[in-house]
Image (cartoon, rainbow, N blue to C red; front, side, top):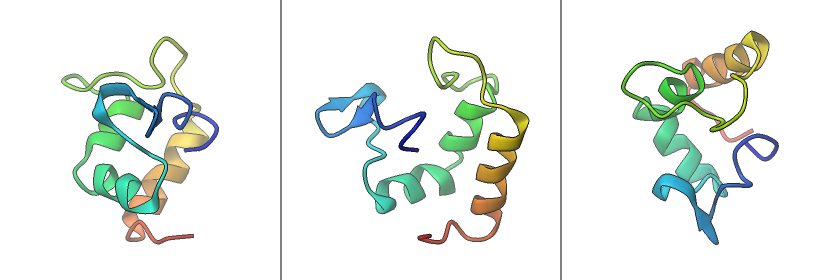
Amino acid sequence: MNTYCKGCHNPSSLGGGIDVSTYASVKSIALNGKLMGSIMHTTGFIAMPQGSAKLSDCKIDQVRKWIAAGSVNN
């Protein structure tokens, strides 16, 4: 989140109204499907990171596994 998302999605720059500066806000978008939809470039979601290449399959898989494990605060 810090490397790929927080630059545009933080309290002083709420890109798309999304803030990923806190665990609670990241967990919320993880659980409602917006995080995976966006990073997977799924139709109906805004592709993220916007204006950049899709994250590597490895990075996406890390996020997928974190969500599947309950989006724990680690």
